[in-house]
Length: 137
Image (cartoon, rainbow, N blue to C red; front, side, top):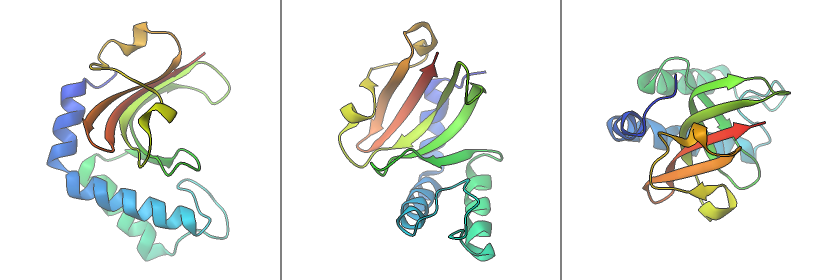
């Protein structure tokens, strides 16, 4: 079930410090050549992985955190459905350090984004922090 925008905004404000710490850690580790979820030799040591797990559990157990590419955007995926090779959707919170227009279409409300054509849509929570909804076909 897709979380409502107001739920994501409330979660962001309630756990802002954990979001910010996770964003900083993911950005630092990506610079070292490791992306969250990767299983490569650049993987952080166990204390660093434990720090990720602790911060994620403060926000929501099972929350997925992912770098979305070279722009430095970091996604916090609250709900998703589908597979990597088929249609699907994801909704959550995203940190975007640069131009939002490069990441998706800015809208005032994403609660009905599932009815829109496949694309990435965003709603600003505050500068650099957005709700995202991505649907692929």
